[in-house]
Image 1 (cartoon, helix red, strand yellow):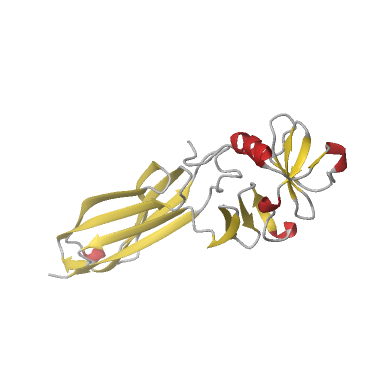
Image 2 (cartoon, rainbow, N blue to C red):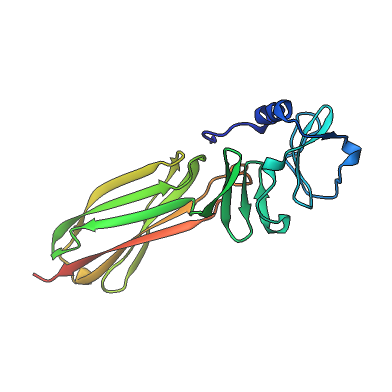
Length: 229
């Protein structure tokens, strides 16, 4: 599992310190009662104070970085990583240049879609099942479990008719399709429901901040109608 297109803070922060003309303060001069975000005295880090001020750390002490100050109060921040943050209400902010931009609400990490073509026919007939599983993140790989559930027109339910796993690269769209025969039996006369169920089962540590959490479940259903000959 890997993260794509991300820059290590260990690389970025020393550069910020070099370029910064802000006042450098000693460790003992900074209020350390606020939350520490990614801070390491040895390798540098980001320090977010309770008042919402941001400092980076170097050998000389802490250097003020006003352009990294979050655009919302600290109490509203669920996760902060220096150049991006997530609010408690689910909004996602990112640094663009040196400006915070509200990207709106965080999308689901994954999405599912299933189609049945054709959607009806005189039994027996064949329909094509088409499934699409997508990653909505630009930076993270995700491990996804998938299954197909079927409810026949007579109400009988078949869970886990098909099951499997796939690893989605950042932004990947995974598709699959196969033919399914609707037999000439009375139980399929009427509407038959075919449901794709997927779940993000990405393991630790890749389901912990700064990565998206695992556990999200998405569903998509198509209907196939069996018509009596």
